[in-house]
Image 1 (cartoon, rainbow, N blue to C red):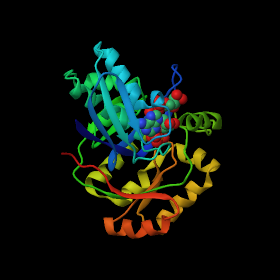
Image 2: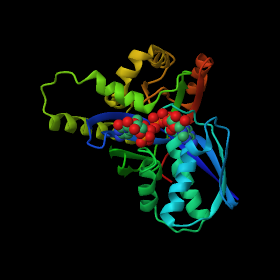
Image 3: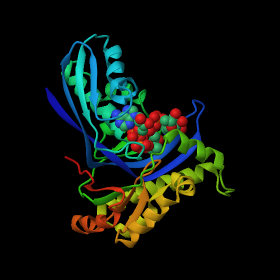
Image 4: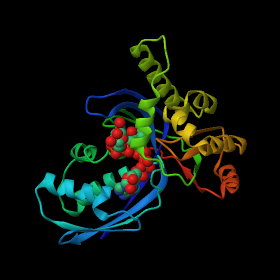
Length: 291
Ligand SMILES: C[C@](O)(CO)[C@H](O)COP(=O)(O)OP(=O)(O)OC[C@H]1O[C@@H](n2ccc(N)nc2=O)[C@H](O)[C@@H]1O
Ligand SMILES: Nc1ncnc2c1ncn2[C@@H]1O[C@H](COP(=O)(O)OP(=O)(O)OP(=O)(O)O)[C@@H](O)[C@H]1O
């Protein structure tokens, strides 16, 4: 029996580009693994058994789907008893389900002695969820395409974040639909110029994180989902403002919501600020650095 810790992520920036023929959207994002974890334990069994503290059917769990996909890819009938202990909230924009799936693939590859490489596991992961491949690239990566084109990045500085999540689970499907329904504002720039501006912004955020330039980070971070999600759930906007008032240097929503995170000067300031958010789920975490 062995245990793996599946980390959550935040999006420092997230642009949703065009809608593709397969119904998904191309995105451009800078994603970063953070020190908030679900725990998975693995042991041999005759069938695939999933024990978890989530209240969804095991067959609907991304961990179960990952196990089934790996079994069929490797053409094996081995089973596993997997215990999933959730600490990452669901529908939070923190990618918890996707990380669980990625670490289920890593764990079962080891348990079953399959010897598959990271690229093969990523490929299997991509059919389970768009965010799954990213979790093979902690500490951070630029994420493009549907979520399957990754540019891994190095990081030497760890940042303390305060995560705050109101009691609203947000469906990613809903958020993408709402973004589509909203339509695009009239813009004069060409699509290519707009995409280049966005790519430049992502590079700027990375540069800001590498050098600890918080004001550059603040002016460059952006999430395309914020406007549509905050319009429906103003509490998220209120929490972002409250994080800034509580001393955060910058605050932004992660993924399709509903978590907002604030960047603090140090862990102590983040922990002090957390007291103001006691009526919501909240957590102080550190961002990952390269090992
Ligand atoms: C919002 C993000 O978290 C940003 O990192 C991801 O794009 C979402 O990734 P995810 O939760 O793994 O999403 P999936 O489970 O693959 O897809 C859920 C639904 O979201 C929409 N979806 C997702 C990813 C993507 N690039 N384009 C989309 O349009 C599709 O309607 C899809 O049916
Ligand atoms: N192991 C799992 N952990 C969390 N959610 C899961 C899992 N398996 C299936 N799900 C389903 O996936 C949906 C949301 O998953 P998740 O929490 O990863 O999304 P999220 O926090 O919105 O992340 P993001 O939008 O960043 O991908 C929920 O409807 C949940 O029922």
